[in-house]
Image 1: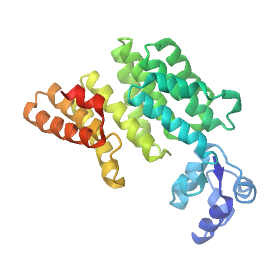
Image 2 (image 1 turned 180 degrees about the horizontal axis):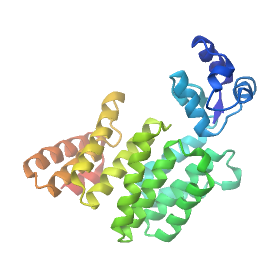
Image 3 (image 1 turned 30 degrees about the vertical axis):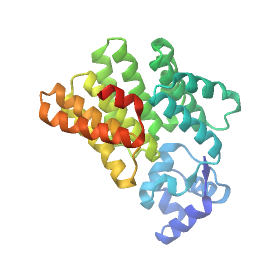
Amino acid sequence: MKLNGEKLRNVRRKRGLSQTALSVGICTQATISLMEKQNRIPKMNILTAICARLDIEVSDIVEDDDNSMTIIFDQIDTAIIRGNYPEAKRLLSKIKVKSLGNEFDKQRYYYLIGMYQVENNQMDDAIFNFELILTQFSTMSANIYWALTTVGMAMAYERLGNKARALKFVQRAVSLIDEKQMTGGQRQWQVIYRNIAELYIELKQWKEAIEVAKRGIQICRDNESFFLLDNYYYLIGQAQLVGGQRQAAKSSLQIALDVAIAVDNRELIKKIG
């Protein structure tokens, strides 16, 4: 990630704040100065607090300085979502962890390794990698991968049959999302709502599953995106079946099928049947 210090300074001045005024209760004035003059990125909790005070998004002043890595990470994520595990494994093997230039990339890498392991029934290894993120990257707890990792832990425990622990982790993830000003791209928000909704269905929390899936649908509408839209309607349909709402489920599953056909999601088309 790369901080645009000049843009930060311009926003601060536009808000009529001195460096000292901006820093009060958050950090030192020297921290603000280093951010503006040397593009120094502080701890994530400090960065998000500063952006909240300026009423801007973190993404307004922080850019991804390695688009190629983001593209690879997105490709891995898509492969896992689509169940193309050989492709996910191939892409993961291309990444050398020692070559990752920042903590954010390492966090993303271990998260995706963990998700690949969850989907390949390697739960102990997945939990190890998720715990690595939650213990070693605690200063980055305000970005979306912290919540994604928490959901990953819930998925691993659910598949191990520990429903109580899985529910505890998924509820913790929802609390993180609702209570913290978490930073993340549109794609990551879409993925996390899909994963949470799926978990809630497995845990028989069908009303919560519908609520979370609707959050994902709203993101799709706001951004005119079809990414995971078919999944959301499918999950709503499954949740409605769990809740005994068969007519509503039929309607939701038909929408899911229509969208899946439009985006050529053959796996979901086959699943809906």
